[in-house]
Amino acid sequence: MLIGAGVPVYVAAEAIDMRKSIDGLATWVQNSLPVSPLSGSLFVFFNRGRDKVKLLWWDRHGFWLAYKRLERGRFRIPAAHQLTLTDLTLVLEGIDLGVARFKAVSVRRVA
Image 1 (cartoon, rainbow, N blue to C red):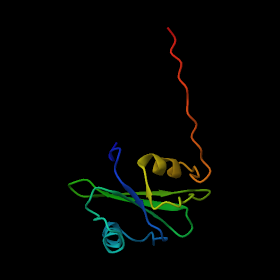
Image 2 (image 1 turned 135 degrees about the vertical axis):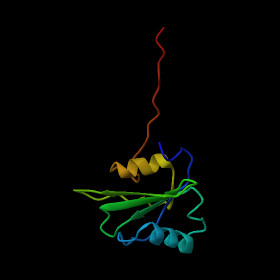
Image 3 (image 1 turned 180 degrees about the vertical axis):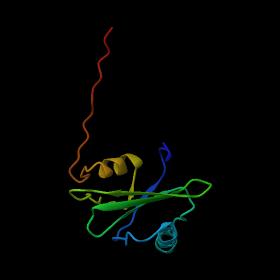
Image 4 (image 1 turned 30 degrees about the horizontal axis):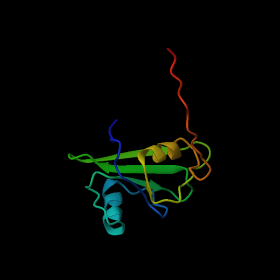
């Protein structure tokens, strides 16, 4: 995977114009967050309609930009502005973190 486990994930609190490119999104991060866009953190931006998302991150050599557009439905934007990579994966798969509950799974060893 291009993004390692444990990488901080920041979600923009406001809707972002999806016409922004890498430079526009990096400038937004620099002006709006206490984290540098070059920090290696992952930054997540949703549009007003919540059917589009952009992910921005730096990997030592340059920026990566990922874009996803839903054909139906909307992303459930989490209340927290900082997530784990696992939480982000769930959001991108359409899971509402506000109602999702994880249950402990017991594993039995069979001899």
